[in-house]
Image 1 (spheres, helix red, strand yellow):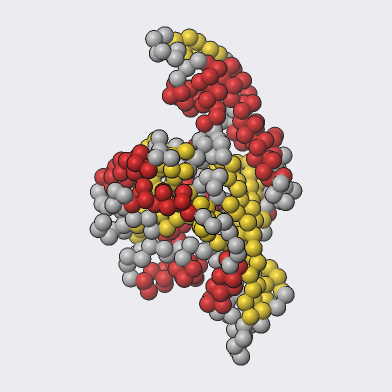
Image 2: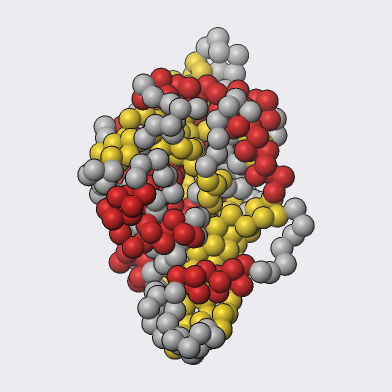
Length: 416
C-alpha cells in the first residue's frame, strides 16, 4: 500500500463497519475529511467476528469505496473496537526515583505506568488502552503531569481496558486479509469521548453513552479523567425488532419507519397522522398512527436507559455525573435526551457531536453514525501516531501532548 497523508478510522460496530478518511495537513495542523461510508456486515455481531470471510468482504467493499472517493490509498488505518468481551478496571503503579537529582522524566512516568499494567489478566485477553488518571509524588496526590518535578516515589492510577485476544486477532485478520494494515487498535469510547466531551464536562462529572445497534458503551468522566467504562451487549436494534414484530413488517421496513417517523418522547410527535406499513410478504400495506409507533418505541428506549442505570449504579460513581452526552446512530432519534434525563436523573443531557476544531469537511461527514470513526482519525492525528512526514517538524507543530503520545503510543497520558 502506497504511503499517503490519508488517515482512516474504522469503527467496528454492531453488525456494520463504518469508515472515515481524512487528509492530514501538517502545515496548518488540520484534518480535511474527504470520505465516509458505512456498510452492513453479516459477519459481525456486537463488534465480534462470527464469519471472517463475510467480515473481510465487507471491509474490502468499504475501504475500497473510501479510497475511490478520496482518490488516494489509505496511508494509516486505526480501528475502534467494542463488545461485551471488553473489560475495564483501575489499577495502581509505583516507581522509585533512585537518581541523585530526583527530577522526574517521561521515562520514569512510563515505568510507573508499566508497573501499573503488570497485573494478572485472563489468559486469552490483552491490554487495549491504558489511561493514566493522575500521578502522586511522595504522597502528594492529584498531579496531572509530573515531568520535571522532583520526588523519590512516583505513583500512578490508570484506567485499563482489556479485550479478548482471539476476537481482536480475528478482526485484524479480517481487515488485513485483503491487504490493509491496522496501525492501531483502540476501545472506541476513548477517542469518542475526547472528541464529543468538553474539558469542563469532564471536570464537573459527565456520562457518555454511545448508542449502537447491538451494543451500548458507557463512560464516566470525573475530575477530567475516565473513571469507569463498560459495554452493554444490546442496543437500539431492539427498537427495530419491536417495530417489525408488532407491525408485522420486514426488519428493513421497520428500520425505515424508525428512522423516518420514530420519536422517543411524546412532545416530539408533531401530528398523529397515519403511515403506510408494508406487510411481511410485501404484497400489501396497512396504515397505523404515528402515536402507535411512539407507544412501541418509548418503552424500549426507557428499558435501554434502565440498563445503563443499572450499570452506573454498580459502578461506584452513580452520584457523580452531572451531565449526559449521547452519541452514535441511536442518539439521532428525537426525544432520546428527554428519556435519558427522566430515567438517569441527570441535570442535563445533550446530543454529542464531534468537535470541529482543526477538522474541516462537508456537513454529511459529521452525522452521528460517523462519530466514532471520525474521532479515531482525530485521536491518531492529535497524538502524532501517524509519522509519514518529518518527525521533528511535526512534533514542533503538535506540542507536548502529541510528543508524549508518540512515546507512549496508545497510552493517553493525561486522559483528556
